Length: 262
Ligand SMILES: Nc1ncnc2c1ncn2[C@@H]1O[C@H](COP(=O)(O)OP(=O)(O)OP(=O)(O)O)[C@@H](O)[C@H]1O
Ligand SMILES: [Mg+2]
Image (cartoon, rainbow, N blue to C red; front, side, top):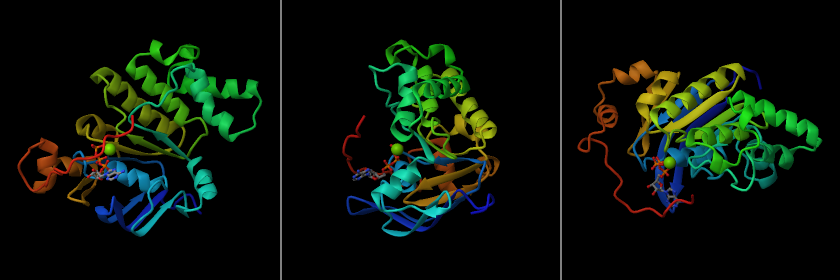
């Protein structure tokens, strides 16, 4: 694998959930070092696409390559691959009876045999990277929503993954905390040499820090290009989505869905 090869390469992918096709004809290459925004209305399949990258969902057709290898089916290989993918999910997933530092230490304890003192140093470095070194011994309930999101980000970075995946990183944050998280995402991406994939419907907060954007609607990628190309797109689908108009070519998914696990 050369450094020039894309970090994610998806070809002719089709994904199903509960026997129903959610996405088809998905082709996407994510070059190293970029931040790619994955946009689209609720229920369009954004999280489903992420599930294919982490191997949680196997393709119904087509191929998914991540970090230069086809996403494996065998559980042991999959766990190995996932060490290279930092995931920040919508809920922070912080354990409430552990401090910020102990939460960040979890992946290091699970995947390395480093001595405690070394883990503590690494944890403090990660917390420092998100501007929260001083909050190391605070419990999640003592943190604001934005701080808790940054602790979760530090934990996702714990194993120095080359690829970061964010699913709705701004949910529940006010505009200031949102700005902090987006700036941090860009800064970490560039200083640590990461590649980031950001799923969000916060279009206007995300586009300024993204290098590339795709829009998913009606089970397909309906736009792929730069943020400025997106903003000037005349495509009626893209237009409807960006303007948040209820009527137009995007068929909104009316099917009820199972409640998501928190
Ligand atoms: N585990 C599942 N079993 C069955 N259907 C599912 C499952 N997860 C998602 N779906 C369906 O797949 C479609 C895409 O869901 P997905 O969660 O990927 O959308 P999304 O774009 O992430 O939406 P949101 O913006 O609301 O998070 C929806 O129709 C949803 O009902
Ligand atoms: Mg989702």
